[in-house]
Image (cartoon, rainbow, N blue to C red; front, side, top):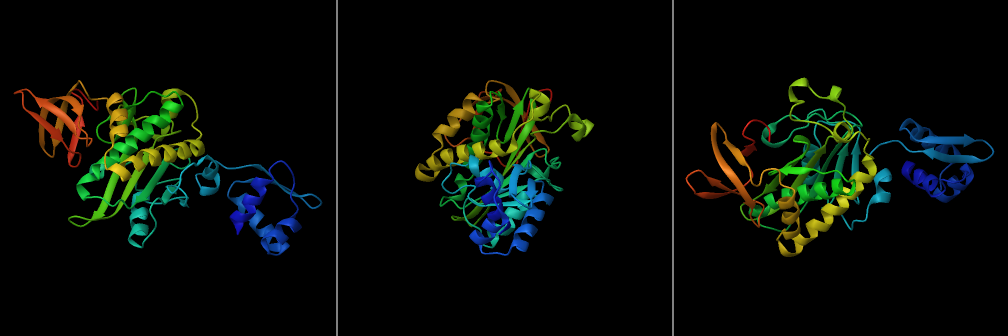
Length: 328
């Protein structure tokens, strides 16, 4: 009911709306309306209250709730339900918990802060409050589990296209890192629950360093991690960016759902690759080899050529790619 009150305030943002009108429309008491307004103010909404005029919404907080992101959404199903958390260990963990209980395809779990954020191979991810975009999607594709790595490429393409709309030039360090000026600003973590030939669900986690400052990072990772704000100098509007990102993801994902190919996403990932044409280090556990990255195959695998001339199509998983002298 609190958010129905908020919806009415948003619909009448240019004028005052009386408490009695809200009470009548929603079928609650004036005292209940006052309590909802009080709670909204605690959440950061600036609301002008007048005993004679009623209530008027002056400003909304920079939070990533459905009520704040909705106006930017053009999707059919992804993001049409957003579970918004102030603070959580990991959005992927929460999304998996909800998916196990039957949460619907397309639901987003969004947190303002992650206390135990992580990336591929269990690496820690810095996720301070109100400064980044930390979200996970619950997906239920009717596909063979072997097709799941394609979803990472779709997500990477969606992030690249969203940044391009802001005239931010970014690159993809295969398979799941988005970089600006050679430093990581976004990581993608795709996890699934499946049997041999059936996917129960996929949880796609996207973490974006939006408005972090240098003080938010540990000094030992500043040589390989950064934020959009540090690199561009402007503060990202997180609400509109999330809406745009989800819109672009659904558009690209629908191609995959209908045809099980990701031609459009691969084209974006190929053009924006940070590794194609370079000699890279391929790390498998304790083993390290060198090869030239040639291209992406139709499934999003990285085609590499070793010094002896042999080629291999690498599949993301327990493989890491690094540059010759550092992160990329």
